[in-house]
Length: 395
Image 1 (tube, rainbow, N blue to C red):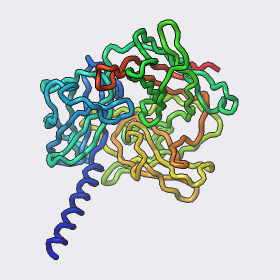
Image 2 (image 1 turned 135 degrees about the vertical axis):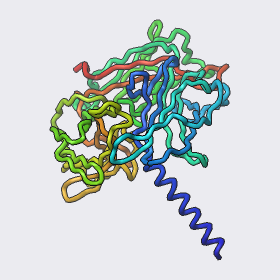
Image 3 (image 1 turned 180 degrees about the horizontal axis):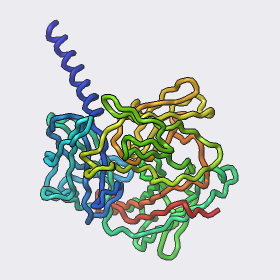
Image 4 (image 1 turned 60 degrees about the vertical axis):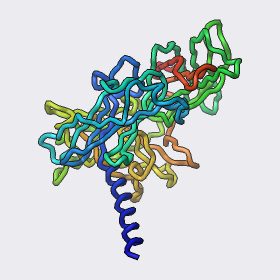
């Protein structure tokens, strides 16, 4: 009997440790050499991975790298085929926060480094584990190597039922040696919006072929809304977005109530990204953590679950991002590091995550990537890429 009780206590403690460990990890970002947050990197760039653990003592973390296909399923290639060197590497670069109310350890590492470099283009995932091999977090990124550059034309849809709410994409991909008529060659066009890999569409075949390129037409996305934003880089300053600041054992940043308008309103944004910054010398180790209170008032949600998302939480729909309904308002509280944040609200409707309103005018950044798998290859590489912003949408 004692063995059974001991077993269940051990399992409970392990599960509790995994849950609490995940909640202690904050501010995960993939940055380029200029500290810009990115999803897509060239093979000649350094990728700097950073994160914090809300802890006073450093711990041992290790990272691994996996290669994936166009739909983020593990590739068939061996690790030695896409990785030169070895992974499962301990992260040795870490710094304690300086003079902050909430102590934390700031970790970072770069790829490539003296231990490894990546040799194939495609989709990748960085997986961080603790000293016992327990999963801590993962982040996806896309690596390109001299891709052909295509174009995206964005316009209002021809279908009159969607002209006020959607955006139509026409993607042109130059590819002299593409062979869509041969089943031995596999091609997939993936189009995603605003660095959000969950908001994407897969296109199997081009609409038509030109002399030296392929055209994928009538790709429709809902326009959505502009991102909301707040800036608490000055941790004690209120603003148009910040209603109140309190300080007790930690900072509390209360945002002004957000409202979803049924009329399009332009708000400049950075398409879902966030920037860690403060008014001190060192952004990453001297920035404070603050409890940020989000509140939303809307009469058109119809009791659907509401979530707040952005790059800051990897657009994850879970118990950490859900808002609670209180009277006619939805509220939640998140612990976030000082900086400038983009965020938006989505509702879960019929098992789909949708924006509350959609407008054809909304400024969105679209990225189209053509993946190719040739008969002699056992993985999907990136053949071409195209980007465009809908700020100049054709009416």
